[in-house]
Amino acid sequence: MKQNDFIGWQQVSVRAFLVGQRIDLRALNRTETLAVAPLAVAAGERGMAVLFRYGAAVLFNLQPVEEAAFLVSLNSVVGDPFDTPESEEAQLRVEPGGEERVDAQGVIHLREVTTERLLVVADVLAKSVVIAWNEHRVFRAFDRIEPVAAALHGRGGRRVAAQELLDHIGDVLLSQHRMVGRVEVTEKPELLWDRPELERLYLRLQEEFELPERDRALSRKLELISQTATTALGLLQARRSLRVEWYIVILIVVEILLTLYEMFVVGAH
Image (cartoon, rainbow, N blue to C red; front, top):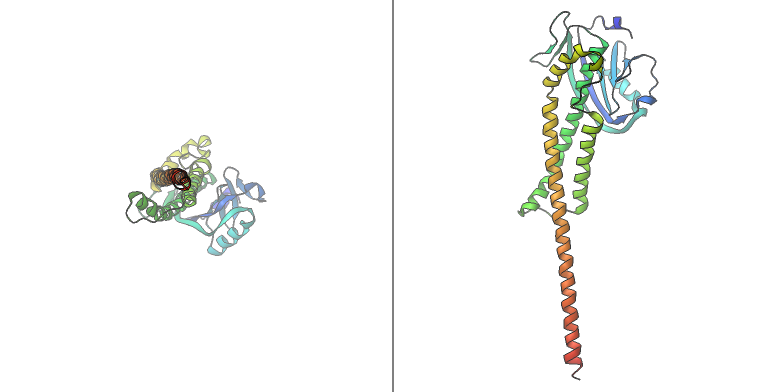
């Protein structure tokens, strides 16, 4: 697929999928590579796919049948695949000489179609779909953590097992590792170092998809879940320690009573 193959792209669809925890890009054997970082390859009849190691695939100008076939072709290189991939869709419109922007309907306007511009769009959509997946996961976590908060408040909350609290903490740590260590949501793509003229496009897309705001909101929610679970675990351990101390006191009292019994009752006979 050459640059000329983008001719005729008037308005095309772009869809981002989060197919799993990771994609082994080194295992892919693609002859029509358009870019390396991130990996961009020709897909379908006249489309393009951009793949990210953290499990995201962004597909440009593919028909539904072509999308399904391409995603199936990734099965062998996707680690920990999701049963239902998270997805996000946008429209891309080409207006030669026009302003690069996102209109009120969410359509992305480009003055021309180049591989570099599509990589910028792909980077933002890939990060957005990862945030969306984590947002849904955190929403479900809030439902599970609510009984823990109720138990801390002492108003009808059920008793929570230590293993369940550790599971909550583990989920938070995994999400934070994914967001910060692997996806780098707040970091600009390396492409902008070589093509600084595309930074304005990136910033506009970043603002439209609210990446910084969603990332901060997600971080606050993850911190709240972590604090709640950690606090509950600390109280649970404190209660267990107190219970053990009471057991020790009771054993000492029983031992004293047995000793007194032997001294004054058994000894009297």
